[in-house]
Length: 381
Ligand SMILES: Cc1ncc(COP(=O)(O)O)c(C=O)c1O
Image 1 (cartoon, helix red, strand yellow):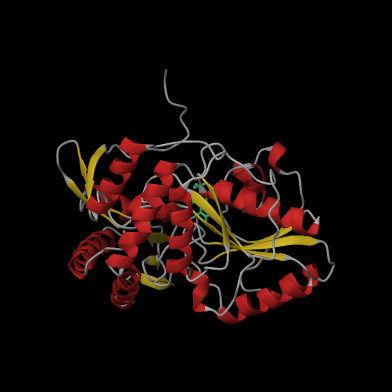
Image 2 (cartoon, helix red, strand yellow):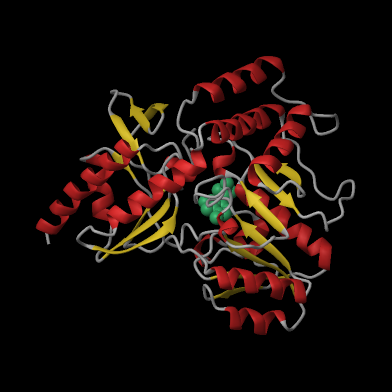
């Protein structure tokens, strides 16, 4: 059987990872400034993570959500403590799209409405309801467009206000920092006003922290740069450092009912052990502070580079916009300098989403390699 061919693949075969590096079959080391798409939070092959997951694998990897699960409870407890969102309730699933899918359902159960407001260039996942509020028509099948979705300009409060005033919007969903769109940080005043408008019109405010959460921004959640309390927060990616797990953090104003949400695999013992290990390492190794320090350093340095039009982001979620399309630069970084970086829907942007453990030396090495590649790109035009 052949694989269903939906991914344009680089001809690289990673077989091993350690810290901020992945290694291919020949043992070539690649500096990972992409984190497997913001997934690798605590670094590849972390010993504490391996130990915890291995112990759980040997004890009990899975049992269903029909019995008590102490590992799930421990994860909820720890997530509340490390994120500062102790009073929220946790529902566990397996991916980011599922997290948003359940968040949208909760909102609709809550106010009995169906219209959703999202933002231009947003990405919220590929499942039924989630893809309908993703601003990319190419990835929506007719079956996905079953409810009204509006896309507003980033930071445009007035247009959101006009829409909310009609009183029929179930939820506003916004990324903590817009990721795939090209790394855009929302204005604090915009977020604050969005929170109060949502309250006024009984609309649910959903913060999609799937890419920007789990310490990546230099705070546990990117929205925590602003004094707001979202109704629902969605997480995935960095939550399991590669183990598939996602979560919905639900404000206590939502009342749980048996059967309202459910899943077979979500919150299984193995996934929760991975999730616990991630939080323990984030805490013990001060990775949020590291993301903030190294992120600030990288942003400062990158701002001095020739050919860089703009540097955006917070912590280790950085978008570098060039004066030219970045595809060739990305290829040179990967094949000549052995560095992974991410792309964005804006072709001039590269995204930096490294493990939160990135050291100053590794940051310097990346800057050196980028400078080299930029000089080659400049010489070729
Ligand atoms: C902001 C955001 N939301 C949702 C998703 C969907 O997550 P998943 O691919 O785990 O379904 C992504 C994935 O890139 C994302 O970046």
